[in-house]
Length: 174
Image (cartoon, rainbow, N blue to C red):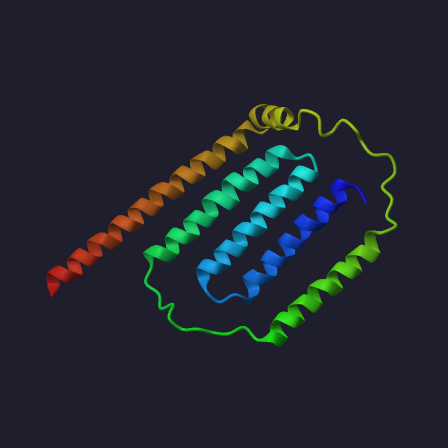
C-alpha cells in the first residue's frame, strides 16, 4: 500500500461518514458541519486525481460559500430547535451496514478492472488548460452564466424589497 491509496481510503471514509451523518443528524447546524466535512474531503479526492483547479473551486464554492449561505439562512429564519430527537442505534447500524455493503460491492467490481494505457500528460498545467478552454472555446456560456447570476441577484433584491414593503404595509393597517 502506498501513501496515495491510504490517503484515498481516509478521504473516502471522511466523505462517506459525513454523508451518513448528514442523513442521521437532526440539528440543522450539525448537518451543515457534516456537509462541509464531506465537501472538503471531496476536494481532497480531487487533489489525489491531480485536478487542483476543481479542488480549489470545490473548497471555495461549496465548502465556503454554500455552507456559509446555509448557516446564514438558518440564523436569519425563525425555527423551533428546542425539540430533541434521538437517533436510534438500529438506524445508525443499518446505515453503516448499507455503506459497508456498498463499499464491498464496489470494491469487488473495480478490483480487477484494467483501463489499459493511461495518459501521462493530462494533469500537467491543467489549471492553465481549463482557463484557456473557458476564455476561448466557452466564453459565451461563461458570460451567460455571469448574466444569469446577475439577474438572480437583482431578483433576490426585488423580492426582499417587496417583502419589507408588505410588512410595513401590514403594520400600518393595524
